[in-house]
Amino acid sequence: MSEFAVPASVAGATEVAVVGGGVVGLAVAWRAVSAGHRVTLFDPAPERAASRVAGGMLAPVTEAWPGEEDVLELGEESLRRWPAFAGELTACGHDPALSTSGTVVAAFDRADAETLHTLAGYLHELGREATYVPARQLRRIEPGLAGAVTGGLVVPGDLAVDTRRLLAALHDGAASRGAVTVPEEVVAVEPGVVRTARGEYPAGAIVVAAGAWSRSLLPDVGAHIRPLKGEVLRLRSRRTTLPPPSGTLRAMVEGEPVYLVPRGRGESADGDLVVGATQYEAGFDTAVTARGVRRLLDAAERVFPGIAEYELVETAAGLRAGSADNLPLLGEVADGVYAATGHHRGGLLLAPVTADAVVAWLAGGEPPPGVAAAHPDRVKERVS
Image 1: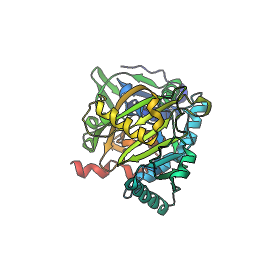
Image 2 (image 1 turned 60 degrees about the horizontal axis):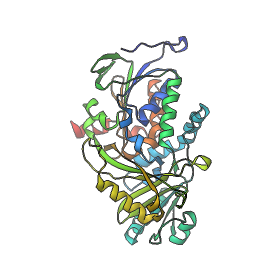
Image 3 (image 1 turned 180 degrees about the vertical axis):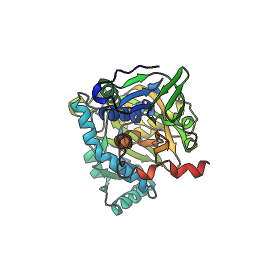
Image 4 (image 1 turned 120 degrees about the horizontal axis):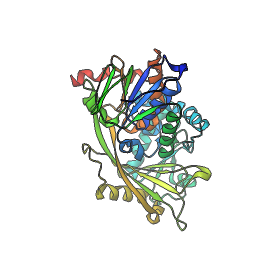
């Protein structure tokens, strides 16, 4: 069992156990320890977190769709918090490379264009900024687009972040302020106690942020969470190739979504390009398949042909924590036990608002706007 050296200034603070070392768990740990709480983070294998292979898009508007207004509201609330969130990390010496280049969403054929026109109309009704432009105008923004692209959306308000730099920043920031990491698998949680195979750890509050692995730790609502496999690629431009897109490039290719996200920004851009992502149900399998790689390369090359000569430097797969309505589970599920999971494709985007919600609950306050709609009570009847 871990021992804690408790500074006198926080001797009366809540002892918080955070289960899960992905972006949500790390953000919660960083925010909680920064607020003066004693924090222990449990994760035996942080490398398996889906956020470690994510593209880094912070794009609630681009991800929006009719019928998911609660998802959009929560995403936009978190997006508003991202500049300050990144700024605080940078002030601590850990720049997560937040990009403000916006998003271009390209349509490959007429059917894809119709889909994007529908999305643009929906967003305009909600007062969001997204403009459909013809192919010629789109190529002024991204000259490397394929000739077959028929047009697309320009969404200037979307952000992106370098996931690896972000995770390192959150980990180092939390550790520098006193958070302790325990590399053990949590097998059960109940009010006041975290159980691992090696023993029990008392805690005043427990935050379950273990992504797809949260399912077994939240018996009343865990059945609402399911793993969704996603494969991604990392490519690298070469001296003889065109540079990567200037900002996030998304596309619909005969109904198949694909994204290309350059890594870094300005002088820190390194020529790397993340291409993703497949999405399908495969349990907890994280093997990268030949079919997945082929699908991603084919779709990406048809939109941005220059990548055909890029170097393929990495393949990876992660497990998103999917939910039936695409909203996460955020809220208290038992006395002092909080769910912070089920973020689906939005773990990176929703990290700030989730962390701020947890800190508010620990202080007995109200969570940020939009969080109430994600309370786990909404799913209890479905899984009872």
